[in-house]
Amino acid sequence: MQIKTFEAVSFKDAVKAVKLEFGNDAVILSTREKPVEGRPNVKTVEVTAGAANGIRNLAGASSSGNQGASSAVNQVRLDAAFERMEKKIEGLESRLPSSRRIENLEGSVHDLKLLLLEVLREGNSGAEQSLHPAAAEVIRMLRHTGIEETLLSKLSSTIGKLPVPKAEAQSTPETYYRDQSIRWMLKQISISPRWETLSGGQSVHCLVGPPGSGKSTLLCKLAAQFSQREKRKVLIVSYDAVRLAASEQLRVYAKVLDIRFAAIQEAADLHEVLQKNSDCGLALVDTTGRPVKQVQILEDLQILKSQSPGIEFHLVLSAAEKASVLDSAVRMYSNLGVRSLAFNKLDESWQFSDAFNIAAKWSVPLSFFGTGPEIPEDVERASRERVIEQIFGLSRS
Ligand SMILES: Nc1nc2c(ncn2[C@@H]2O[C@H](COP(=O)(O)OP(=O)(O)OP(=O)(O)O)[C@@H](O)[C@H]2O)c(=O)[nH]1
Ligand SMILES: [Mg+2]
View: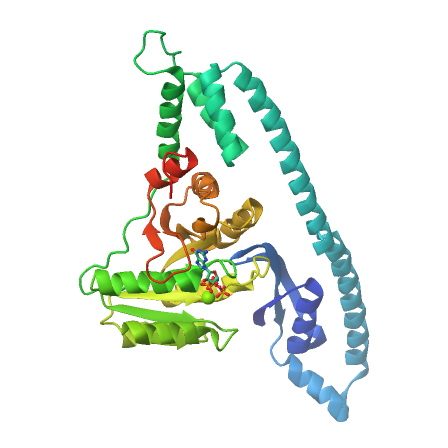
């Protein structure tokens, strides 16, 4: 007996493929749903079917005119059996959640989230009433700067448990609660390690993120810093499968800086490019930004990952985006295993609250801050102190 597994987007398509390969005498041995790697909400159907050897030949013989009465009867019975099976499968398919239902579910989850936030906010304001007025004032100030309600709730409960400062204490309650809050906030975020390369090795860092978040600009800034200040041998790789002209900006820039450059249009070409330039200890890979909903990019990036197992992905976000957009981007790219978050366009508002919220909520270290469009100067290595100073208005930029 010949056995083969068929994969398709629906049961119906899988059965069609079985029929095409084995003819009507195929026997379905098992069926299962299979999650698609990197796309948690998408499933394919896997059907394992078997067919007695030579079935196709029999079919061929029948068409040559040697068909007996019994094989004609068998054919009719099999056709009827397949029809019944198809109906059953259609029934099963109708029970699977449709994309409309998934959208509705997503909408409901969003509404629930808003409701929960409202409840949390009310709960927090209730809890704040029991806080020392100076502590409540810190919470109110942080809310005003855009710190998320869930994080504020945790902070409230932490400072709420602290012993109330004594009247004769050296610092005022205001300073005391502000310092305690700063200490707590510093603990919530971390900074990514430097992009070092072991001697003789090659480290590969790939910038990913939503369109226009400033990936290419940041990559140019970093390439300049690593090659000119740190005297490292840098390779810039532009991976843009969509826009042929997109790599030109980087090519020109690499030429000006005398940095090695390569452009690839297929993720599968990365391996060869890295090997050809193995003397470059640091490879920086720029990628196309696509709208967050187009999850196909993850498939390409997964290929990129498999081409260079040591590759590290860094998510580049724009501080000018709405918090919900930033959250969706982290959710989408987190499947890749994001090593750090880089925040660009901080110069447009000097609001560091989103950088704090996202880094604290998702426990992803911060790596770089883009503080303007100018290359190479408008970039700084992320620091926890910088974030907290900006949030508390302790420094002026
Ligand atoms: N103000 C400001 N502008 C920035 C910063 N970083 C990038 N930009 C500007 O943002 C725009 C988009 O930057 P790109 O580097 O092309 O963004 P990208 O993520 O590579 O875009 P795609 O490749 O289309 O996804 C450009 O006009 C940049 O000059 C920054 O830190 N501050
Ligand atoms: Mg770009």
